[in-house]
Length: 548
RNA sequence: GCCCUCGUAGCUCAGGGGAUAGAGCACAGGUUUCCUAAACCUGGUGUCGCAGGUUCGAAUCCUGCCGGGGGCACCA
Image (cartoon, rainbow, N blue to C red; front, side):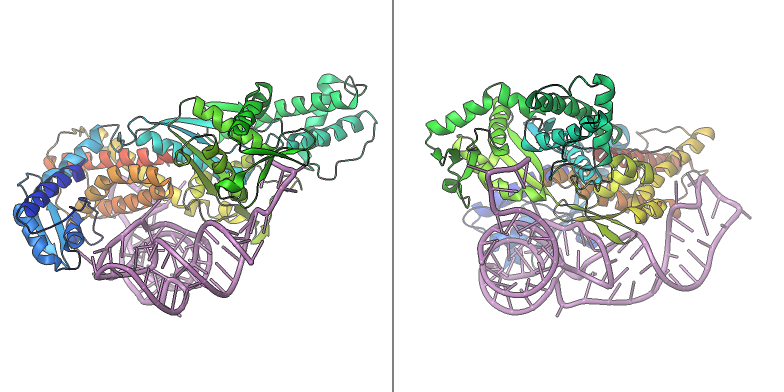
């Protein structure tokens, strides 16, 4: 990558300047950034400012320029402002980027991650209800982050953890049981904290149809357990199908019940006990999370002998580490933030490096309809199924919208507005640019112009062409940066800028003309832009249509 | 009360130490014998919540305060 080359040149100049006594002490890390202002060159560095340490940075900057080794790629280097070094690169550099973007399907991908194994766990909703719009954000974000990490050279495992053993599932089972028994004229009270959505009765009806009344006569415990399993076995495939329809697939579906049945849960608690990190109190077992900065110690085994969700979390992280991951990413709902301290405490207590466990909170999606805010609650039955949203606004628009904002900020999804604004949505703007390029390429093909990726690009001198080429060049930095920051919204931003730059080019520069060399060069630029748009949209899980 | 998070244009937001802080929407007007008008052009607004601090330099990092949201269970 170009910055590596520039960093080498700069490091050489720094060493020489140090030998000449112009800079002293530790040499600053060579670092480049893209200046906002074009007059400030293609790449700029502030090392002179850093090296000055309170002194005057400009003489240092000038000394560094004098000591820079020559390079074919660097046209000139200016000292500007307080002491920036502004690198103006030779056109060859830009032409090489465009050539690669046009011909290399892996343009933008890198090996920054060095093949490190990362586990990304997201959505992980209880199998107690269908996929909702709220979970759609998790799905879109987790999927995009996974794709970004892959593009940045990590080996990613996407994982879905479903709680088929916890208290919520039993509550769900009791809710289903109510409807099931009612079906056969047995009236029992609906649980206070039960699930009220219409799908609960539907599942009960399906069970009633498949199993008739054979469950009615069973002892209460056995019947409820059977219903729990049957209901979960209906919900999980439904969730999986919704996610697949949304374009999200997982490598691993991990059952919480497995952690109980395999003995891993008991084993993990035992491990903490050997370390002296759990204590029996009032008949319950507490993990001493206060030793790791938590507010209070937390129960892992209740006084009735049942393990908490937290206990399963502990066993689960042990299992993940056992599977050899270098790094674990958890995408949790913001409402789980109170559990992070105890969780990371347990990670540390188990002897793992807590820096290898990264919990990211995804802020809530507030739903509104016609300007009126609706709080979605699974148990209250106020659900907006993801499938409904996809039907209304389209999969691409839904995914894209989820990825326009940082995960740290609540997302207000107005369903009415999303429907109305569908044609105005920026996703269409980006897709349209892609479709338009395809149209140009079709036309060029009809008129007998072949695309030659090796075409000389020296004739691309218009300002709009220059701007577009530079935008394409920045993609190589944007992708790994977005991956490191877990920030897919950087990609959506980039795509909108790229589409805008292409539109300006389209306005100013006619592609298909009588001038052979110019036409050939512009066709290469078109192909490069098309590829990068398709690649960027691909990172978001959004399609790049050839016609619109 | 304690913890986390957010506060940037009328609205929704981007901006992870740099030079003159940006986009979309909304609003007003204009552009089509021309490779897709789902497009383009023109018009303009910011005490970057407030106050300190660190730094050559702060919307960005630190501290405090104010305001919105979330969390503080033997729920998840």
